[in-house]
Amino acid sequence: MSEEELNATEEYTNQGALLGLDSDDDELVGDVMSTLKKMNPLKRVRTMHKLTNPGHASKGSRAEMERFFNELPKHIKEGLRKGELRLADTVIYSIKPVTQTTIKMFETQDVQEIGLRNISNAKLPKNQALLVSGIILLAGVSTDQTDPNVMATDFEPIDAMPTIVSGEFYLNGNKKQLIPETSNYVFRNGKNTSLRQIGYYKLHNPRLIPDDVLIEFVVELGAMTNLAPNTQLFAGLHGTITTP
Image 1 (cartoon, rainbow, N blue to C red):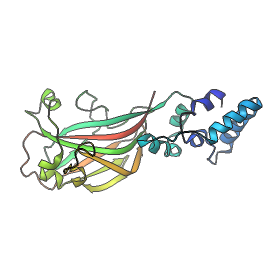
Image 2 (image 1 turned 90 degrees about the vertical axis):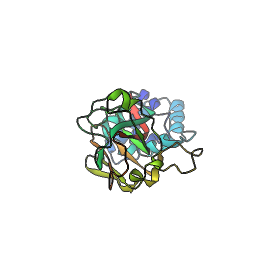
Image 3 (image 1 turned 180 degrees about the horizontal axis):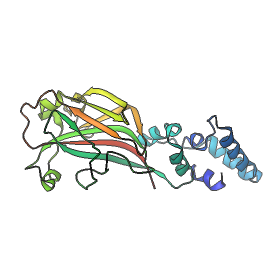
Image 4 (image 1 turned 90 degrees about the horizontal axis):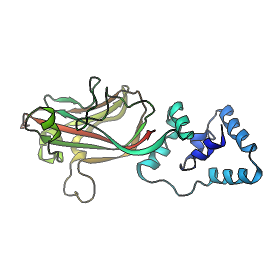
């Protein structure tokens, strides 16, 4: 490990997790200590101070992501440690038509296309790991099912579509349950439009999705009652992501 790698972690609150200081990997801990010993005494003291006193704590989904550093894949932690990857805010989204009671918002045949979805094959790109801090679910009715008109759909809270409100959703990663079957009622806006983003459900238990993991966000409806033929759903996974 180089001094540059140590310096690259300074912007994070949970530096120890990236450097492996709180792990059982004796080789990695020894590597960090070896780098510190090679520094002149004054720089070593300053670096140790930075490691143990990281300064202002991060906020929002970034702070949540930093608490998950230990769970990141090794290659992503190394990228953050070396400064090759950084943290950024994002919303991974997809639009799908409501043509049946089971709507798979991310599918393996999906192709990234601006205005419809921003990932392909229901997976994050290499070196990207997403900490899902909240979920967005909106609904709208397009003029028809052509892509340009679907992109032009005016999406609104699901409140006006009781059939969708009474449904459920779940989120899996590589068949592993991240969020169990939960009522779509949590996406109702009610009268609190000034207090939060419309159609937004804040997770009190954020979930990490690494790269190359199949994302399954599925909405299940009990019926298709009173739904317009061109009803569309917008689903967004909001949080912090690793990016070059």
